[in-house]
Amino acid sequence: MAQQELLERLQIIERIVEEGRSETSSWGWCLMLWGFGHAGAMIWTVLGRHDGMPWWVLMSACGVLTLVGGAYVRRAEGHVTTSGRATAGIWLSLAVSMFLLFALGGNYRGVAPRLLVAAFCVLLAMANFASGHLLRWTAQRLNGMFLWTCTVAALLAPDVTTLFWIFMFAVVVGEIGFGLYLIMLERSARSKHAATAV
Image (cartoon, rainbow, N blue to C red):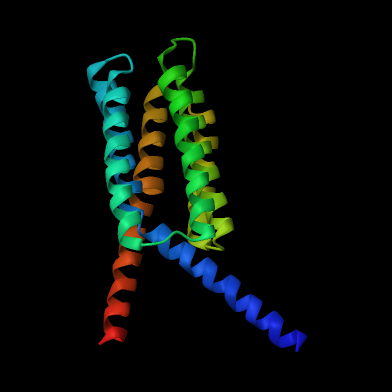
């Protein structure tokens, strides 16, 4: 009896983890949105030399689009699991931390660009690795490890140009690329679900 109960509990845990992964996959668009926002703000800053304005404009736009899109996703999913709430808490913590760091700290000339890029990468790495660990998802843990590698590269960057390319590489692979991967997973899951429903 105890062995059967243990097996049932393990199946429940696996179902919760799988539901959490499914919920996370439905947010791939959001990672891509923020990735394009971060890349756009960095390029605008470098080309336009505007003090903080590109970040305020594009991050505000990403925030509004995330709220609108997030409401749609939550309505479409119908319910939120415990692992979904935990993952959302990790990413909300990231958003608040990034806002405080970049919106407030990024406007001060005394903050070294290498520290801002390293902080960006390390925060994004932490959110990815923590989410991947919670969901037992190797791909997301690997994304976190990739972003930690970008953190080290940013701290060791010899000049601002190299730092720019490290930032762009982190954004393109860690946000846009991983977001695209999540979108592909979600579409694949929908196709399988539609095929089994027929």
